[in-house]
Length: 88
Image (tube, rainbow, N blue to C red; front, side, top):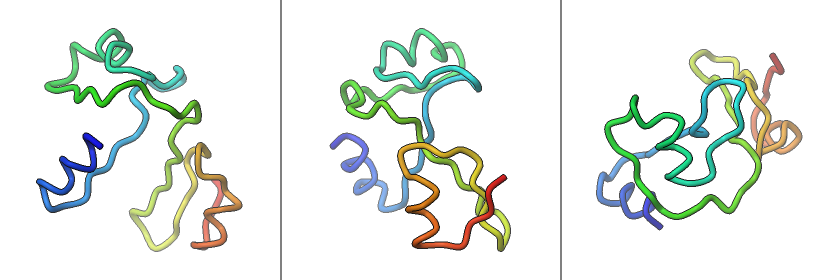
């Protein structure tokens, strides 16, 4: 609800990836984010602990060819149903 309300107030898309350093597990709460990344962030929105244990799926769409960078909560099979995707 926090992110949805913020997105509505901004009237624009809001994107994010997992809050973690590369190779480390994603943070599941604002406290974990603060402990690992707090010195590098201006703001942490605390919408409660994450219900998901899967990391975010990352797709590079900066060119005309979508490239799967990291498979997470959205599987490559699901992505392929919607977009042609190259597996890096």
